[in-house]
Length: 157
Image 1 (cartoon, rainbow, N blue to C red):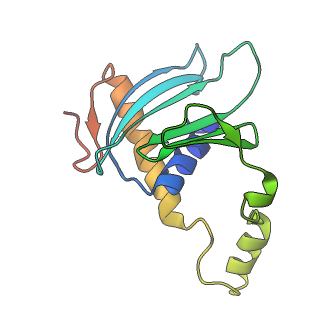
Image 2 (cartoon, one colour):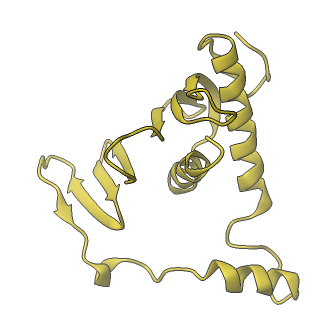
């Protein structure tokens, strides 16, 4: 969860604007000191439920998928390509690059913050703190056999 998992969590929270309320997790280190395979279920304050899986032991090599399903349709990000199925549709349609917003330049953003050219980075520090809290709650849940851990009260329920 501390490597690619943190980015996955951050992307979903940033895109949706949802706030984690509780988490249940199972983590397998596969005999190492770090998380290799992780499965999390997160309940959000707004009522949504999300599942996150990081499978570091997969034999097929690295790939990344993020899918968000809502009342107005589905969006799927898969290896630098974005697909959508608008409400009522079942087939996915790729979003052409010309319809996507310009990408950011994280290195320039960082330098601009350090030099005082901008007041706040595109990804402010509270985003990182939110991911750290969710990751630590997931670790506590996994240590307790998958028990639900509340992020609002910071206690196992």
